[in-house]
Amino acid sequence: MSREVDILVVGAGQGGLSVSWYLRQAGREHLVVDRGGIGHAWDAQRWDSFCLVTPNWTINLPGRPYAGDDPDGFMSRDAFVEYLRDWARSFAPPLAEGVEVARIRRAGEGFDVATSDGRIRARSVVVATATYQHPRVPALAALLPADIAQFHAESYKSPAQAAPGGVLVVGTGQTGCQVAEDFLRAGRRVYLSVSRTGRLPRRHRGRDCIAWQKDMGLLDRTPDMLDRPERRFVGDPHLTGRDRGATICLRDFDRRGATLLGRLAGVRGRRLEFADDLHASLAFADAFAADFRRAVDAHIAAAGVAAPAPTSAELADVPAEGAAQPPVIDAIDLDAAGIGTVVWATGFTYDFGWIDELPVDAQSYPLTEAGQSPLPGLYFCGLNWMTRRKSGILYGVAEDAREVARRLCLRHAAPPSRSVTETK
Image (cartoon, rainbow, N blue to C red; front, side):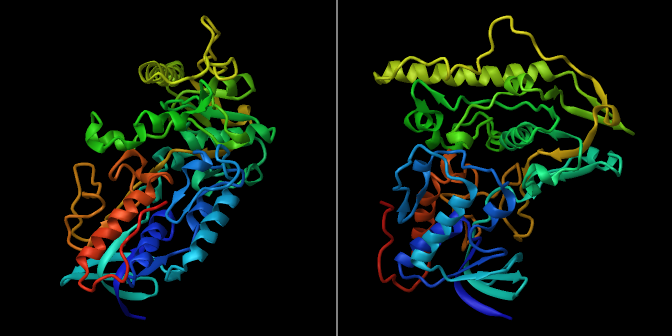
């Protein structure tokens, strides 16, 4: 079928719904489309034991900031999806579910949008599909023996999904560490191919690391404050909200029986080869955590903040001087190790090639000013580092959505029935 709308919002996650909330407040007609429906990405791309990585107080959706009795807790996946859907029910966004956008083309002063449900003509389009849409799987995956089960972490749900035997998790960003934790708790033999990623202590000197980042202004950093533009896409440091928030430490995985390995460098039949970089990667994670602690300590001293000394529990991830290092293993045999499954926790990539004539930067990332593309009538919301560090997380999405909605109201000729309001 074909239809015409004034404003089309692509995506019914927190970004698209936040823009819709503000447009509703302003009395602007619009349509939201999503291939799966409200909360679909959270359901489809998070595993059963997943919890938010940022505390509940960071849930700052417009009209529905967190007001529960556990601000320092971490909602489970299912609890957050219900929170999102309950919020959406409160303002009834004009939503068409099961509609996937395949192409956005410029057409006169607006856009011609090809979808799985026909064409949509829109004067303005807001792309709120988040930054990372496609799982990244290395070419080495094609070299694994056919009898080894393998899948990307995007489709991981629980340890029961894996084949019998040991499990190799490749990649130790936030996702890889949490997936490895899941398998360890299930009593599975875990091998972990370690990548160069930082680690954050969950708490330091009595407060959560995200609270310190907020107070130190780190969540309000703008892209121009980075030493290199590509640092916008560096993987998030090790962190989890499970067990009401805990510090993830690769050395602790080693103590619990996981076999730590360097970067997966080659596959030769049933032999896997690993780079000699394990100790360097562990040292990088240790240094990252130490640098963060020093920054917090300096902030406390400079601002005169009353904060307790760090506890032994908060410092449990700090390696003792002279502590033994896990052995460096250059290769393992799949059969001897009993590995039956490989989980690729190797991250995601972005691709905005489905938007014709899109202005992008040197990293092929959309150019925007406060969410507005140089292509007239095209807007974004929920992109990583779009305006600030917090743009791509729950804490910052409402602020960006409000500005996008304000600009949309200015673009469209009909006067709004009400002004766009602040999030309380």
